[in-house]
Length: 412
Image (tube, rainbow, N blue to C red; front, side, top):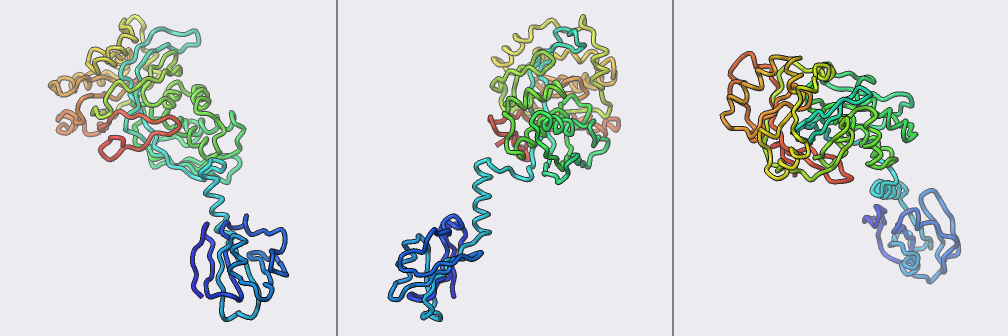
């Protein structure tokens, strides 16, 4: 007998007419359960995967089955048996229902792979010290195309998450913001789901690029996706500030004016072209954020009005004069070689970059306007360990996470 695929993956075995019929219900399991024996049939019996009905004499099987909204054909070899078997496909129906549930959000996926971006601070003003020991800041944050790749899978464990990475020196316990973010998510939502996580680390640590904060935000997003959306995007953003001041920013759409400790995030349209090239240059040495803030002296900070800096960037783009970072001076105290590194990049650029500045608390130096570093970084042995990466500005749509850029660093 030949066969054909029907409707939702059901299969009907096809032959001629007026005999034993094997048919598939067009809507799978839901359509197969008949409350009574249909007209022109004298017997009804249910089995695991079929309904058998004895057809009365002189009844056209195709006509009867069409009344049941099923597809049917018959076999000449059983022409005198006078039975109809409605055969349906439980596995096919299950797959269809699973697809419907997943597409509607009623049932979550079991794994997800996400791009975890980093950021730069186009300007960073320190505006005062708070009673709780933190500093108030005002900064233009922008997501950039350099990022990690993180795969999340639901784990059968009921007690712990499991984090792996090929990167050296990355903690795999609660010192890692990914684990802390997942613990926070369970605490806030009451979820009992644990995860396997693999981190493909590409953003250097101790760089002032917010790689760890981006990882934490990505983990919160992934956990919410894999557990059926127990929290709103706004709730994820608010909760994230409990474990890191920079994390809430990543729930913006990519560009934001951030104040207080950094956790007060004002979404703004990207003031800069997403095709603006930049190059990130990080020496092997790192600046500890705590050490930089410890070395900070408020009297050494700029007096520039941060809102005027923002207005200038939105109207005229990036220039050297608006890329103020009050953490540069203390970072240069902590790591004197970083000051020399930045000055040499600026001198060697010969106008190649619109601006050269340090991101965050360092130690990454950013050159905006060109994706190529100065030649001396390639030519001199002492700079052989410098991390170099081109990057572009990146944004996202609401209710969607950041997409991994193309190989050229640009988003689609």
